Each structure stands twice: as structure tokens, then as C-alpha cells.
Amino acid sequence: MKLATGIIPVRYHSRRFPGKPLAPILGKTMIQRVYECASQAKLLDRIIIATDDERILAAAQGFGAQVLMTSSSHQSGTERVAEVAKEVETPIIINVQGDNPVLRGEMIDDLVRALQDESL
Image (cartoon, rainbow, N blue to C red; front, side):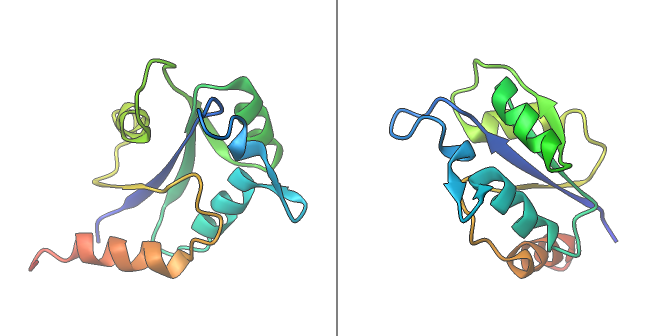
């Protein structure tokens, strides 16, 4: 079975909602809620938060997440994921959207299963 890593790209400086990843939702930050939802997936070997912001780094480390700092020059979350993916020796990389606090782990597992199925 192929291994899978979830990477959550997160940036602080949004044009529409600066600081959105650290916005509180029922007592937890949005990024913590996304991380906890992704952690419910049974087929991810690990989850990494990819950010260029020290505030997000500190918050994520505070709730026990693995975090890797990335370049601040990225124009998209996909670029941020690609930077981290170069450091990961996993054949399947899942880009987990950092602003989806209602994500279900089963959704990620369904995607991983489909990517593991070599008959597709």
C-alpha cells in the first residue's frame, strides 16, 4: 500500500481576511480545527502544516502539529505544498485546504484509496 502525507498550506496575510488561520472557532483556531479534522483520516501517515508565518508556526506547535516553514514568495497554497513535498518521501501528497474546518477524515481516506488504486 502506498503511503500518504497530508500537507496543509497556511498563510497569515490574506487580502480578504488577514489572520484567518488564527481566527477562533468555538475556542480553537481555524487551523487547529482543520488539523484535527485531517487527523481523523486513517490513511495519512502524517500531516504537516506548511507556513511562512511565525505566528502560525507557534500556534501549530502549541497544539502539537508538525510544521515546516516555507518561502514567503509563494503565490498559492499549491506552491507551498510543492515546496514541502520535495522534503517528503511519500508517494502520495494530499493538499488539505487550510480554511476548511468542517473537513471529514473519511473524505481524505476516500481520496487516498482512489490514488492507491492502480487500476484507475
